[in-house]
Image (cartoon, rainbow, N blue to C red):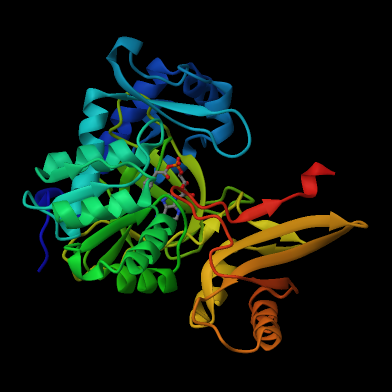
Length: 431
Ligand code: DLL
């Protein structure tokens, strides 16, 4: 069953995989202790020496790394190699705060390419595939990450980058693109435009590789339907490695983490305590083979669970469930925790009446939080607007445990995204 890019690694016996992880972890801890001042100081403070890492469980003795550390030691102080060995810089700005950078060596780029290549092959890609990369190119890791991974497989890469949507679709038809790589929100927009242009029957697309933002199972169904493809989820982050840290196989039941390169843990985001297998919590990743800017126990802020049960595809690497959101995405509205993905789930269940184009607007009036959701009606809607609004408000209240005001807008009135969608407008800090 299935096709693999690196079967000897992707399907390695777990005992062998864990042996490899321990060996690499020891190697990495020694390197960062010797070469990165921040880690040496933190380990010295807690009295942990590289020799104290004797088993995989000993990883919990090591300090965490946070995004703030990447800001504090910006741009090059976390490098474990001389700067001349860095051949690429990628960066992410985040919506708030200073930007952070990640330096990659030639070896790091090679590993990253392998990660994405595993994804492409798991999505039925090979050297005959035509891979349209509609992630943005540049400091964002999406474009170049997908590009170099697809090249590694030997596919024909079509580097359209994001934007210019009608031209994207013309290329897709003219060049017979078989695989599409972009954010799920852009895939939705492309699907909508394909329909308007009436060219669905000219597409040769088979699969899509979508990530960089949370998306729901309902959204997957809509994208698969609109473009006539199988949609795979891919995960990554600038700090660790772009797309390909984990990737979804043909079973579409969670993303296999490249465990030969990373050790994953789930912790309680409040206490930092490591949680038992199967728990929901914050994903923490240690890069055990990365050369340029290795990170120990990096707190991703992404919330998910890890599934160690065997996957029918034959891959042995653990699967992460779709991240439900981020610790810093979570909105606290009138004291209640709200994740945008919960709202999306409700809207997508009502996809006959409304489209999944929405925006959440939070503000504060007279010391009370206001909570509004703008959502577009579907072009085919011809029911009673007031009744629809009431229905959505009731469903949202039961999902979230808090009331929101729904505003139903005309189709196409919310700006479409070509990269990561901006779903939340929180004006509370402006006051
Ligand atoms: O978004 C890397 C990437 C590019 C991944 C293309 C997949 C495809 P950053 O801009 O640094 O890097 O953002 C990383 O995006 O911590 C998650 O919160 C979120 N994210 C990435 N992939 C997924 C996914 C890229 N499949 C942050 N599902 C991460 C949910 C995702 N969230």
